[in-house]
Amino acid sequence: MARQIQGSWIEEYLRYTHGQESPESFHTWVALVIIASVLDRKIFLDRKIFKVPTNIYVFLIAGTSKCHKSSAIGIGERILKKFKAKQDRSKKFPRIFAQKITNERLIQFLGERTDTESNDENDNDNKVRKKASGLILASELSTFMGANAMHSGLLATLTDLYDCPDDWSYQTKNKGEDELHNVYLNMLGASTAKWLRAAIPVEAVGGGIMSRTAFVYAEEPKRLIPFPEDEVPEDYDAIQDRLINDLIHISQLEGNFSFSKCGKKWYRKFYSDNAEETMERGKYADFFSRWDIFVLKVAMLISVSRKDELVLYEEDLKAAHALLQNVKENMHPVLDTMVVADTQLPTAEVMKILRRREEMARSDIFNIARSFASGEQIKEILSTLQESGEIEAEIKSNGITTYRVTERARLE
Image (cartoon, rainbow, N blue to C red; front, side, top):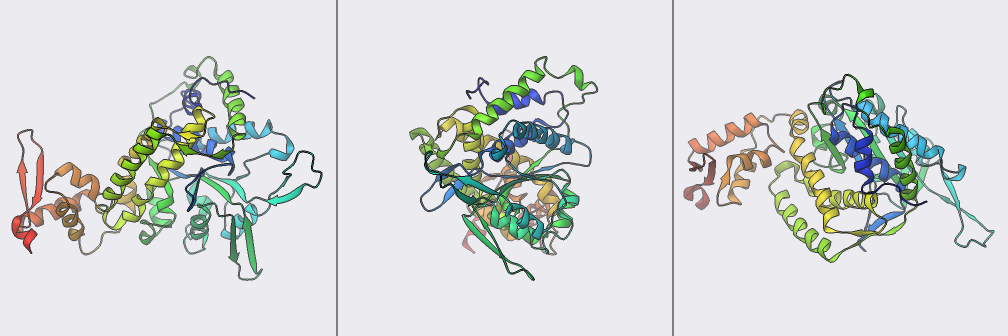
């Protein structure tokens, strides 16, 4: 089945959702999850020491009813159901889990699927291969997970399964050991930042499930659309048909990605820059340190949305990086909500950032430090450090305020 979309599947999906109010960033990440789900472990990037699969975890975060998080997920779910309806009975994937979940039920759900396969078309001795794959859809994470997700072991299981292990086992209290094989799990959920704070303790923010999830935050809808029926493209049904047709085509791709020469050069520099930036992220360095893997995952999804060739070009990697930078720049309200204010301000972390640079603009300090402190805390820290003579400020001719560590403080 040849592709019908000229260009990107993701861009066509954004045309399809044009008449719906949810932010474009929500629809973009829903599209990425859809593509990841239909690839079903068949595409990866082999780093020899480990493989990078194409699965992703994504949470859409906004105020209640403000940006229509559930509606954005619902549109994606309908596309997947239509996609599944066009598959033959033996290939109705991805399996979707959209009920209230417990750790035990998730493991049971993933362990229920088996696939029959043969290495030779003329071989009648087909073998059964277990495949623990699926997509978790949670339009309301508070209902889906419950407030005790951390203590029930669910978050730990989701963390383990994110890496798509070939074999995984779990020791139950009463039934012995459960085993999963050929894991491939995607997750798309929606929540308010306030609920995340209640469900996920602050000690989990810098690692675990948090470091493996893209938190796509938005404050406002794309625009107000009182008459969506007047906003959809005239060829709305034709767009839907093209999306499903090409999704079937994409689902049939398989193999190992490689880097183009320019792609490899770009990623080498990004990897170094990301590592340096991570060192300045304070107590949440673990979270940001995984973004080198995020870039690879998203770049592979962007690539297959455009072409069949399994090569990561510079344009794929740059597009992935741009999407993730947008997520990073907008996620501060999520972290601010989840951070519990300590009795002692993270002054040492701010000083560590300043010591690594000869001079820093005030805005750059805020951009980095807001991963571990609120805006008010950063202001208080900078003021205290100035009064104590450890840093000094200068207002440049262009009006930008910069800070640097004083000579006395560097010698201490």
